[in-house]
Amino acid sequence: MPNDLVAALDIGGTKIAGALVDSGGGLLARTQRPTPAQESAERLAATVDEVLGELTATPHWYRVGAVGIGSAGPVDTKAGTVSPVNIPAWRAHPLVSAVRDRAGGLPVALIGDGPAIAAAEHWQGAAKGHSDALCMVVSTGVGGGLILGGALHSGPTGNAGHIGHISVDMDGALCPCGSYGCVETVASGTNIARRALEAGWRPGPDQDATAAGVAAAARAGDPPARAAFERAARALAAAIAATAALVEVEIAVVGGGVARAGEVLFTPLRTELKRYATLPYIQGLALAPAATGTDAGLIGAGAAGWKLLETGTV
Image 1 (spheres, one colour):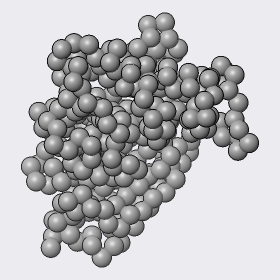
Image 2 (cartoon, one colour):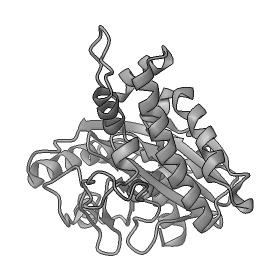
Image 3 (cartoon, rainbow, N blue to C red):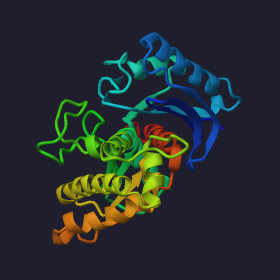
Image 4 (cartoon, helix red, strand yellow):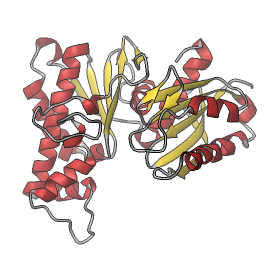
């Protein structure tokens, strides 16, 4: 049964994961390594080789027809390179050619991690059945991807939909991207925790000073914790409404670690969306939590591999 599987790689700042993906989005032969994000380019490349090596060693590898990669960005799909902000040693790293060589010359598709999440949610998740969608991940950073006209729209270099770097505060903080007041500077898990601490919140007995700890405190009614999530929701709502006004999406799907806060985030987010999504054609914008969870990157990378295998394009 050759060509009835694709290989998928999900490359992020904390983990490098791999799996084989069937035509229904099912994942086989999973493997994962921690990302040596602060180490050398050679060590990073060796980790990718280890993950891919485990996949090529499975008895199913002969069935694989293509490889899909979803990587933290920026990416350059034309050049086949990646320059992840949170992986300093990789700048214009030729990931596609390296993976192609390791995979025995199979065709390789590269997309950014935001578009990968959008592809996953459109194929198997909350955006399934929608022709036009914005899919987001709110975690250590804030990323996203777009489904337009029923297909993934990743743009000329593969970075379209990067909602985390829409500026929502003209006088806001400097963002690692070099701009100011980006959504990420307000709504990422790191910045939710920072804001809560600055406002007087203190971790509980478990000493969890992350956004998850802030979420637990917000559920218990802690005012600074609730305010930090409300502020994040306001920034997300402003960016979602701006995106919907620009490209007319019908649903916004929000996933990632911060979204696991549940109604601590989604209740104020719904309220703020009503304030910002005021144009008649976006007032009916739907909002939903992501459904593909921690598998989103692999499923989305698999979707890119399948599209390359079936059509010859990403």
